[in-house]
Length: 154
Image (tube, helix red, strand yellow):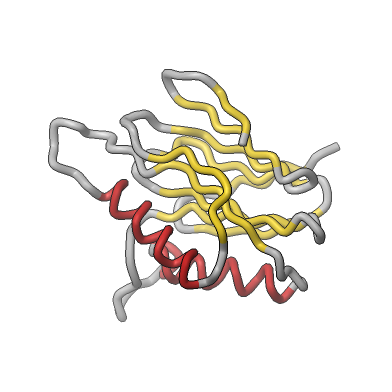
């Protein structure tokens, strides 16, 4: 039986075994799934904003750099060395408004993962639909369901 672990906005979780990490209702946020296939350990970060945290920020995990620093540190502390990434979200939820937060989130995630030497092997980003993500850390498989679209496996 799989243990389902919900990861909300500005949170990150690392798990092994039969855990399924899930984030539901992802719009302009970006969900980053990190995986070490040899260790069968995965991590999921649900990131709200691009860039770095401000010095007065109460929850730094809202930001790309702090969230990815935290989750990479957690995975490496468990012995993970061969980490790959799959990224999802970054939608433009209000297309009539000039809103680039989703796109900026995706750019910031790509930049930070590149700096960490973590290769992105799959992605479903952009567009105008929300997504829900289920990450099975026993297999590395990620299922993405769109609000008004199909469900895909990555």
